[in-house]
Length: 338
Image 1 (cartoon, rainbow, N blue to C red):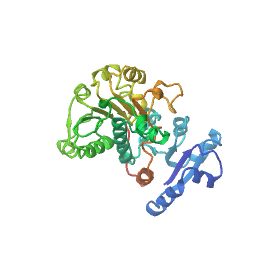
Image 2: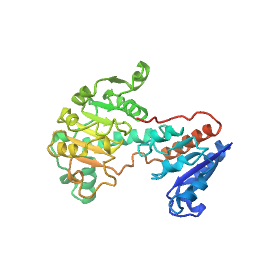
Image 3: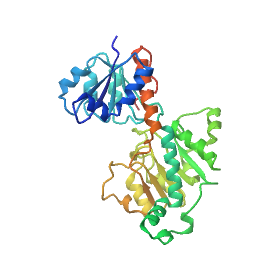
Image 4: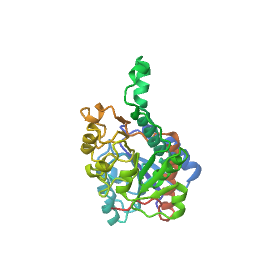
């Protein structure tokens, strides 16, 4: 039985030692050696190989772990007779043709919430930074303008205590946001298409409401949903118009969940107070994007997951899932086509 796991990436160098270094793979290899001795890891560099060479090198793979996006992934998978799983290191799988792979009998799994804590903390950090104009405060101190560099009406500087936080998506990340903010004396409401049991809601200290009610009632709206055809532009002009003028929007999931043109228009007209974004519709963000010039927006470069713990957890989860498949078991964290 094949036990080969292929790490497929654009490593920039065909030398195997360079591949391992580029992927930060020593930790991954050590994790595999310590915990999962039933798998064999191989590296395939799609940057320096032609397609047929890649097919040949992957022919015995039971699991493929793509590092980044590979445009020919679906074609490659169709030629691999032993392949059972495409396992992503990230939470997002929107770039993978899941319906086509499912027809081939190949499943797709994400990282099982390995980065959930880091993203939840980042979302809360953006809430705090936006509410207190932390970016402007830091710049003023560094630029030597001190308090004179911090401008804004009194209402633009607020605490989170006593605020209603509306969480759209109460899964792995949203639930962690809820649990943490409850301790900050926030009222937590949520909207989700999935139905959770009462115990789950109690653990999160969250009350289920409709999307419209959440948007109308929340002082902070934070987004924690996967990106697919159902969530594309989930927050459009219609939804933004329902929000309080004093509210802020936080997005740490995917840029396409928000209609960015509508958001720019809403922020420019101050129909909502501010936004904190770790993601944008085009990444890296274009230099002429109006969001960059708005003083009621804080943007970070899609690094909410960046934490040592996220990487360690992701490596373990990815290899654990690969190991299950090698042993003939069903994978966990399967992402179904939508």
